[in-house]
Image: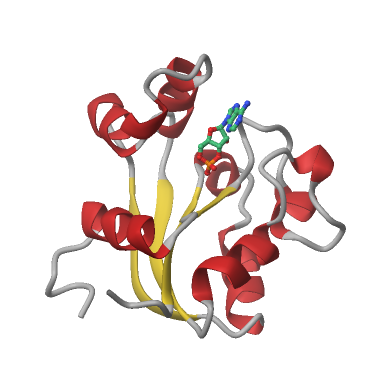
Length: 139
Ligand code: CMP
């Protein structure tokens, strides 16, 4: 398994608020290389599958509704120590707790509309990347 890749989404709020360009610029300025990227929208069925790990959590229904509410940008990013470094770049899940200068501090409004997703492990980066991209698209 690759240890130098992570998976990200710019969530519906980030797209709706016209932050795609600024966020991609922050990501590449921080040293991440974009190796796959897609502008798309999840159906509720696909959002439910992507977040199946959270199916028992009280926020699952709202999460699925929000993540299927508008277009998103999905991408695979490459950098040494990608998973940990990207989670540092995006900041805490709750934007109110995110360090100044992190993506969620700069662009997000709430724990639901927290603008950017980042994989939490190399295993999940692989699974999440494969959810959106074929093997040919994520060579
Ligand atoms: P993310 O880590 O990208 O994927 C799961 C999402 O669930 C998380 O971002 C939040 O946007 C959302 N969420 C809503 N409430 C909570 C909560 N209490 N704890 C963790 N995640 C939450």
